[in-house]
Length: 209
Image 1 (tube, rainbow, N blue to C red):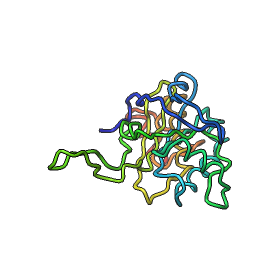
Image 2: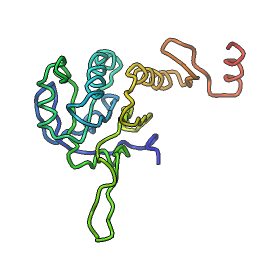
Image 3: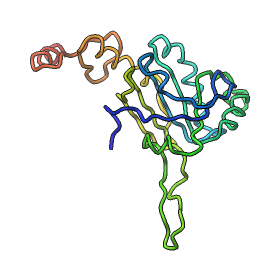
Image 4: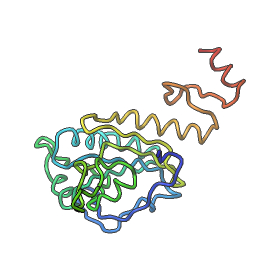
């Protein structure tokens, strides 16, 4: 079932913030009523596609911050693994320079609750607990509004990297709707005309386009 329109699942977990500080009991609840949250999962530390995504979000971090959005990443690796990867230079495949929080979902419960876990637990014929997949996170992304509700979600398979500009566009679309009460048609970008959510509004927009 889609999580869109529902409260974002709450959690407390270890995380690395500011590029090297390990904190306990990190939670997205701290942003409710204060900031939007762009919460994204990635499969594993020390891999190939993942650092390109984490660096891409860092490169656009100022754009998210201008929009009052807190970027937070998460994978099923440990906080120690996150910390080690953050100390490794970009030229060596590391993510040194990334400043937004990276959550350690070591229990895999965060990924599971966000429906982002690649795999599930089952029981074999002998009654033994088994895993039916690699038990790591898909490339999942969630836009959470200031009320703590999920307004957008995207889940990619492991080989498919995400478009950070598209994430920014969806933030702009949500904020445009909240500020103007108008909806955003196909391929809408910031500065473009919105569409009034009525028959007359739709007819008027289509007549112009």
